[in-house]
Image 1 (spheres, helix red, strand yellow):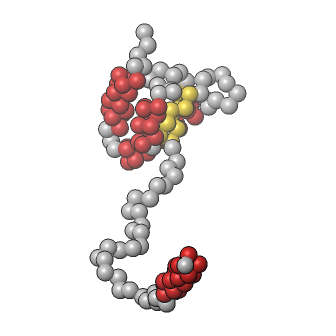
Image 2: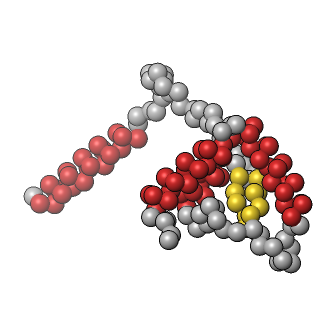
Image 3: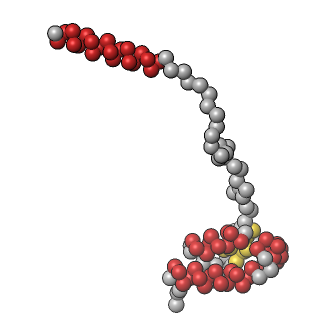
Length: 134
């Protein structure tokens, strides 16, 4: 009797399992109203060339302060400390001409009031990071 029951159970499992293969997978209409394609990014990340402002001393550059460095990079420039008398430092005339060109270009890139914005950001980042010395 147990053999007959096991045989019946095995046969029913095979029969039920085999019926699953008989189902067809048809093409269904798209019923959702959403698009499946990804939309292109309207503001793709672009590599921005940072304009260097050369300084001989580190005063007001907050070098190492991540908040201030990110703020200046968003505006499109960075401070480069180049002490006088170093091997590859610019002459004072070259440094002044380069800085004049960069400051003129920043008027169009970051707005005409960019020095005021930099001063405000410097104060905010100093206060936030506790970067006061003296």
